[in-house]
Length: 115
Image 1: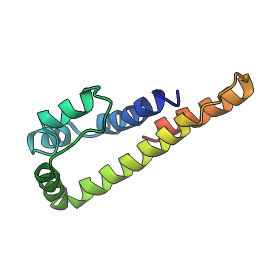
Image 2 (image 1 turned 30 degrees about the vertical axis):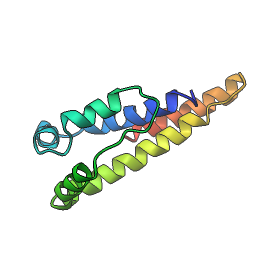
Image 3 (image 1 turned 60 degrees about the vertical axis):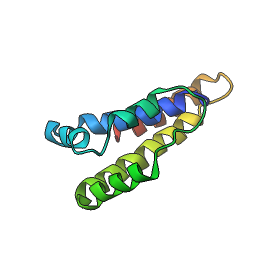
């Protein structure tokens, strides 16, 4: 869980946030250039190294977010909650202890529900 599951928890949290958005917002995210085909290719490959986004693309995305402050705040909140879910996922008990696992599971599920 600490090795692979935490990254999936982060992605799961972001997906849960996205599913709560209106369809028009998701259309704007993809149609407005905030997320492009090349961005999806970066996160879907398993090259073993951190994805590299060109500086020009980052500046474009910052510009898009700058003109939509309410959406930007929402994204920042979603990223924060996703990082918290990832943090809890990494703290999965290393040794089998049913009580500790149940306690961890409740924290983990609560983190995901907040997304």
